[in-house]
Length: 152
Image 1 (spheres, helix red, strand yellow):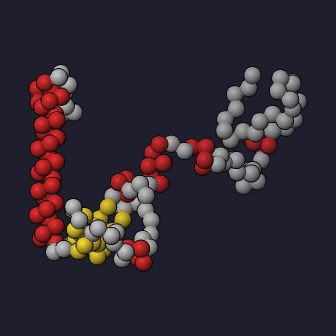
Image 2 (image 1 turned 30 degrees about the horizontal axis):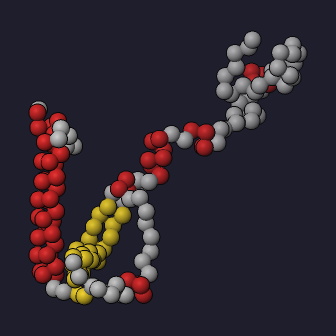
Image 3 (image 1 turned 90 degrees about the vertical axis):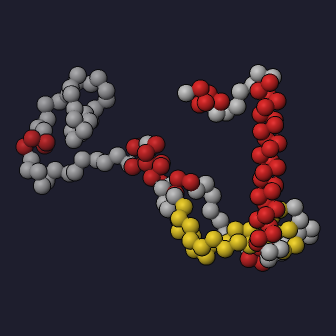
């Protein structure tokens, strides 16, 4: 069995057939007359690192506005410029500006201060409920997600 490098052409006959003693062009011909070695397609070398490179495009969003809905009110809060790392982007799409202006029926616009106050109150209530639920589950023998970190 012959050892071939990636630059050598494979034998022309069927596998296992004896080779003919034909003159070799790889050692006798000048380098400029030899055809370049065949390149494998890029798809052959797709790795996880290359797949990450495909999604590693950062986004810069300007004039951003955050719309917060709480109970039956909402407010648009200007946030300015956002820089989003590409690895955090799952989906990017366009907003239909006509549909964006149509607010669902029960909601009405309110001042951002009022909405933020209601939002913070809602978050505190949710935190208290979550803490109570974790305490009850702990009494039953369940551990929370970060309970093991407290030991260290």
